[in-house]
Length: 323
Image (cartoon, rainbow, N blue to C red; front, side, top):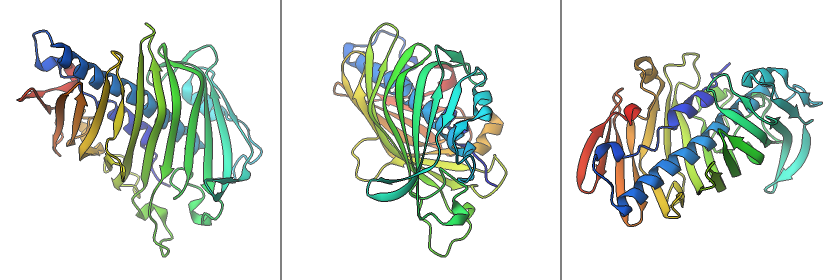
């Protein structure tokens, strides 16, 4: 048995975008305001898509082993997870070809209807999420009970009139398991699971009808603790995916384009949760918009709630919880 922490780690990642308005008490210039808006909108959009990652992890993990519920149907346990009567429909497993590879496919839809509130994080969702879960047909038997931990597996999520807290979410969210497993490995808990997470054509429409677009491409690696039952010995690294120039990009609600680069890999340690530290504790992000740049340095690995923001040639140390 292994831990399933991705849905918990998601909430820690929501703090990726730290607005720098707390660093400056006077009014922002138009360029500064654009940069601040880009930082905020990227964090908002990425937070929503990370929320999708968490729910996708719940769904995928509920389907282990692969031989369970071959006939499809409804999943009562998942309905209970959302605590508001969401309808979860699961298809039978079928054989398909995906990206030129023979795969086993299971589709899952999560229908929140006219709206229901998650009892875990109090988010109100409506509409439908549709997930296509692929696993290579030649997956070794001992690995098949771990859907999203299976090397080569892919989970593709799309949306049908899907809203979260009044914001409409659109786009395609794809998680590909890029884990490398040596041929002599028989216990998947001894490897470091790695997933490439890509958002294409992402779009968030806010209640005031303003729009932010969003694309992202980064890799998340479970670097320590995967093979244990202790939830406090895990470490995750989030880095730029291979052959990418930026990890996040889009347009903010002002219509300005932006890019966000993970210039030094971000590190999350669940040991820090004991100290109520849920943010990354190491790594650097660089945000550029309208010819302005700001960097956020999450630290040197210590479990503390401080980050250092460098903007307009000056550095500020802040607590993002109060930002």
